[in-house]
Image (spheres, rainbow, N blue to C red):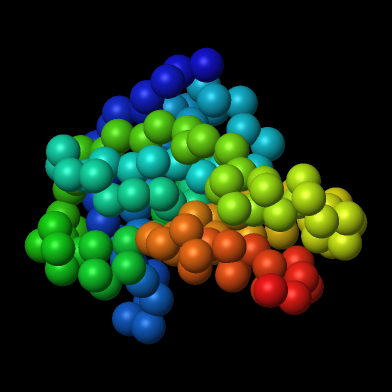
Length: 148
């Protein structure tokens, strides 16, 4: 499996109310043999932009990820700009706070196991987005219905 995908793509937007997006060539991403949505660490024009969800776009034979306004403003990107893209598959390791909660609390473990793989991925990313360990712990407990 290719560790890093590198390609050039154009920033686009399909509706003024939607965020801008970048597409990834089907053939490039095919090297990773993904079955569905994956989390990637993304770099645009040499600047890390963090974890993004890479989604299949079957109708267009490509993959895509969104670029919220704060990222576009920080990198001075707009529709039509061509960007150098680097993607790496992000770690799927659970945040330490979530892993600890699941390990020590039976109800939390059962709640986690009831979630589908996409729900687990979304919850993992929501918890990881918190900067402070205390916030990550609170988010994990709230999401899994554990009283803190």
